[in-house]
Amino acid sequence: MTGHTAPVRQACLSGDARFGLTGGADEKLVLWDLEPGRQIRVFRGHNHSISAVSLSHDARIAVSASVDGTLMVWDVGTTQCTATVPAGGRPLHAASLQASG
Image (cartoon, rainbow, N blue to C red):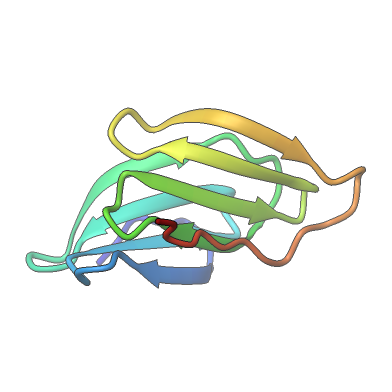
């Protein structure tokens, strides 16, 4: 599988393990359909290496943390960033989504 132009730093799976999300030193996230092993979406917006990724159980929302000091929330269907949370200039190294209800 190709998709990143620099090392992959983090990876996670959707709740049904059908999709994978990777974040790399190339500052982008890539969503994969794991059955055929193909790239289906690319997310861009960070200004430095991505250090953590998380995907909602239903694979509709993704979050990413970066050494650039931001946490970004993504709409997986549109690849649009729906929120950016600054960490006061400090690198972030963790991100997680949890199901509620």
